[in-house]
Image (cartoon, helix red, strand yellow):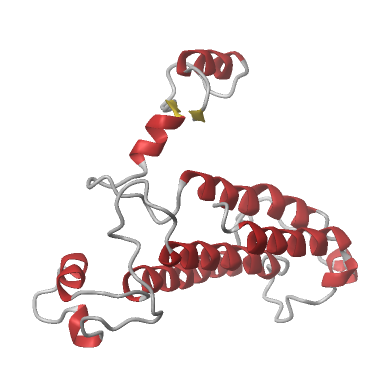
Length: 219
């Protein structure tokens, strides 16, 4: 639990409200300690800052839940037979979608993080820790996707970099489009089918997109 208030007061309130229980395995930290822990051992900021992670959490949890929960029932849904009591909560199709989208996001984000900017051979060798084949054999020193400087070596409290801004926007957009993919969880091909029948879903998706585009400088 992360709080901006006094840690002892917040812990007491959380216990009183039943959010946490004495004897359970939990961790209560204040905002400054949380901000310190998300930095690496060199004191450099992580690719996503605290306010960015809060925004992503708002998109993935609150907005996504509201958008998907307001989906109107379809004719095929009303005709579907009920599931048995022994059926798993997460189906095999849902598992494949979760794992597939997770791997896809990791590949894209790591590519942008380590290859999307000016790179050096030593940094590539350090991160990959390979004996014979290094990233330099694939991407020579100075090779990059975007003509920008790396944000990984920026000093603490430095201004936002173009490198990390691209990573943040890419990550948010992947979450946003995953909301559309999550509309269909039974192997349907057309995830856009009937999307305009739910004005709340469309408002949340377009609203989140507009906020992200116009407020990325604030993050």
